[in-house]
Length: 342
Image (cartoon, rainbow, N blue to C red):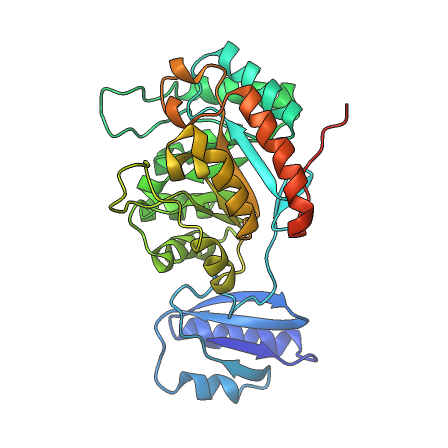
């Protein structure tokens, strides 16, 4: 539930209210939105406690919420949140594009990719250093060496980096190099990992699981928010269906639905959502039209030789063409795209 505070509430009354809630074994989340200051009461609802809170001198109104993902819900925050990364934000007028290879393979590959995607207008360099793969014999990434190479390539071309963290014990290491921590689809319900990134001062890109409902995705986000990290970006990356012609089915309806249910920014990953290079551009445009706040696109210098996800990776020329097409489309949707000065 939400306890909306009186405009003239004293610090003493506010502190007493917080103490009262915590004394019942509940958690407190203090926030402001819509010109109101309020206290979120997190935990199992206690019989009669709402009436007790309503009578407190600090409280103007009690609002109940029926959703289990309290902090992620628009019931808690009606205004859309923005997540700042460097000099730009997710959730604003600009649609942010993150681009790069599925995996960092070597120095030449990641530096060439960083140069190409920056020139085309990408805002963030993506790439994997720790790769959870279906087969134990597939390329698993370069680990810390990959993090260092990607961070260096990003710095060389003015790009923050986003990369996946796969285990709680790796969070500090990855956060040392990365600007945004990605939770992959296979780890969406790794609750220890979610709590660990929630305690880290880095924005979190949270991917929807392969068979996860939207409520399960928002509850995963709740773990991060409840641990103290407000900077969560949701990512629709395709789910498993009966369709065999594509790697996954990109759930475009999830984008506007998530934006109705949650105040958090939402981005789309048409690369994993299709698994087919030729389908990435049309699905990227469709995701933008559906309201996505950004896109995650796989790009490789030579997809035919990529150590992972080559069939869904765009070439440098293909990515540059997609960015040009998105710049034409964006104004009709009320969005902006980053344009690189010649």
